Amino acid sequence: MDKVWLAVCAIFLLCLSFRTMDLGTGLTTDEILWIDRAPSFIEAILSHQWDQTYKVPHPGVVTMWLSGISIKIFDGSGFPEKLSFARAPTVMVTSLSIILIFYFIRVLFNTKIALLSATLISLDPFLLAHSRLIHLDAMLTTFMLLCLLSLMSFLKKPRKEFLIMTGIFLGLAILTKMPAIFLLAFMPFVVFFLSNDTMAKSFNYVIFIIILAAMTFFLFWPAMWVSPIDTLMKMAFDQQSGLDIVVKNPHGSGFFLGRIDDGSHGPLFYPVSFLMMETPITLLFLPIFLVMFIKKLFKNGLDYVNKNLIVLCLYIILE
Image (cartoon, rainbow, N blue to C red):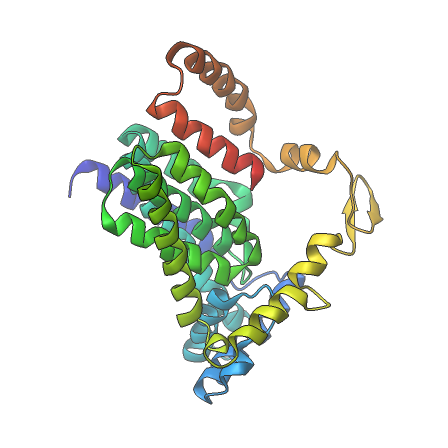
């Protein structure tokens, strides 16, 4: 093992250590729901009640698989132990993802950028906090990012395993939480923007990814085995949190700028939230990056590096 991979292992261990400290303390509101849903999901599988693996439209399937198994196997004598085992899979998945993130960014750019990126992502306070919970958002972020990076890596180095990983990560992302369907619209743009192949061949890449994602979605969710149409309809039109409801209506309630409201915060919400959640490092270097990137764009035009940076910037803004 060379020094680079020793550094990656060190980043992984650092990432893991921050996420495992006092894992059985504190509790967020939504976690109570998933601590109940996850073992119930596994019970439905063990009793062959496949349709009962549909719990909510989100659908949270990956979280329920991993945390449900962990709770069933390692359930301790008290609630702190149970909470620790419920959260452990999210901790492990998000920590291990750092190795893949490093690998893909190294393929796309270089080793230095990959090491810096992996370090900053692994230590980002907001992501770190979410990846210590039995919840969906950290898993969603992880699978969506891995999906995008594996696709971009394939378009630079057309290795079949990169394309296969793209489809699997897309399927896992949608199984985790529905906002991942954003990638269904974004991926074709990425393929046609970055690919040097013909239009027909690029279109085949998109179709292959979607088919593989659909297979992953079907295979890992038993409810799809027995009632696929009904399951998809409930995901779309469930009156509590189906896709149709959440797109047309705000979350229902929220807290913004010192007051409780209906969750419709107006145009200031995202800029203010961005400033609150970002680190001083991000806020310091973001304007520096933008100035350097614009200068490089005027100088070199749409070269390989600039096109990849455009894709990443659009993903951050749109997602």
